[in-house]
Image (cartoon, rainbow, N blue to C red; front, side):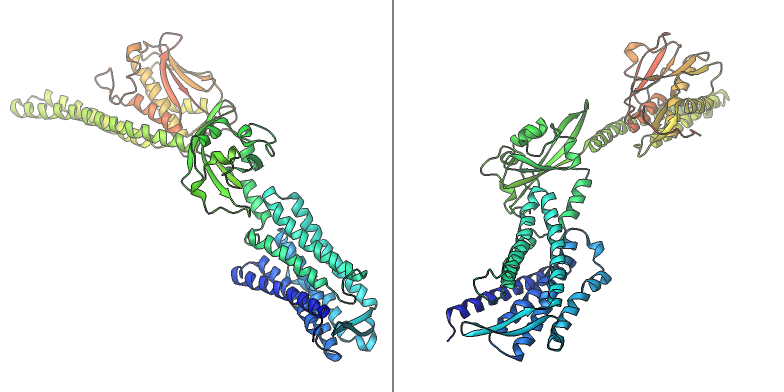
Length: 584
């Protein structure tokens, strides 16, 4: 018969063997490729060896008991090394986990097993050994020798380092990870407390080392923390680094309050220290309004809101993902509106991740594409009209030339042909310059103006550049824009003076020529519009197209001298562009 004491001790050791075995199997089955999971499994393997040997030792005596004691110390000595390896990987210090490091850490544990195995020859590990009754069963009792304390100090040292790393991790982690970190720390604390109680004799069963039982309870906490939050797949520190580096704003809301926000989000929020603040008060008003209008937390649950930052309007796409208590996406994402998370509704998820993606550039890009499509339709209509006129002239005078043989008709045909050539050249230029500008560089405005002036027939006209700034632009396209403005001024008055100057958010090109009547100023940028018989009507259309391609605006007013003044505005970064490059 096995009495109650023996049964209780046997059950405790059996549980202490079974729990690590279950966790080891789970780790290897589900996360075999994860180095962190493998280190965790090695820790479990050491505990199985330790507890299992202690369990079997209860049922044997003599030489078999000593042999099982040696087997148990394979796990006893190996667990601190395995646990430290796991902790280093888990806390993103895996650069310290090398084959040489692990081998070096394992030297003293291996020596401990060897010293214990040969203890009958020298007594360095145990000075004396004897049998102790555990009810109807028995175990070994011993007096510690010098090497035992060397082993104990070394093991405690490794456990202390691992515990310190886990405590530091738990203190510094984001709130959603602290529950998992607390589980890890609790697991180590339970093991420490159990072993310390055995060493000072404060155990319910004298002569019975319950350290593996305490470790089994501890690894249960470890296992729940590690596998419930899937912390071995991507370590929280690595995940934290990714979130901090994201350009998207990331805000974590729990109980209606902000528990975390990355730098990109902090730049958007209404308070400098958002953690702990009510989400409805810290989030930008448009985001809160959009949430209360019904933005959902499903995959498709997103909306675009506009937020004014530093006096400029920017657009953000808002997405919300609910989390469960383990920090992973919940299974009922489609049923929970974001408003319940912001307003701490009872039906809301335990926590919600709010993603704010800046789509301002995309919206501007789409707007420019829509405008270009509209311009393309106008362009096609104007091109067809303007090409049809000289073709009709050629057809008519060709017929007259056949009938009369008058050489003057061929002169009119040649003029119509020249006009078609000019139209084709302008059309090609317009097509090339209509593409969106993908990248810009700092271009000297005086240099690019001089280059454009040299490319036109300036006749008796003069150029004056009053600005010495640099413009963030595509140099070739900016030359094309200025060429057409300069040519337009000279064609109106061959002796005109053209001035290029600076404006707060752009630059202007003005002249002292006849100017443009106010009722015609809105038409001058239309495709094919011209007041001269030989004009193509595409010059100022090219100006507007080049400006649009840069994201600029262009308008025409009257200059101080009564001539035309073309203002190009919306030139961002005018004051902080880098050193200029040559426009050549």
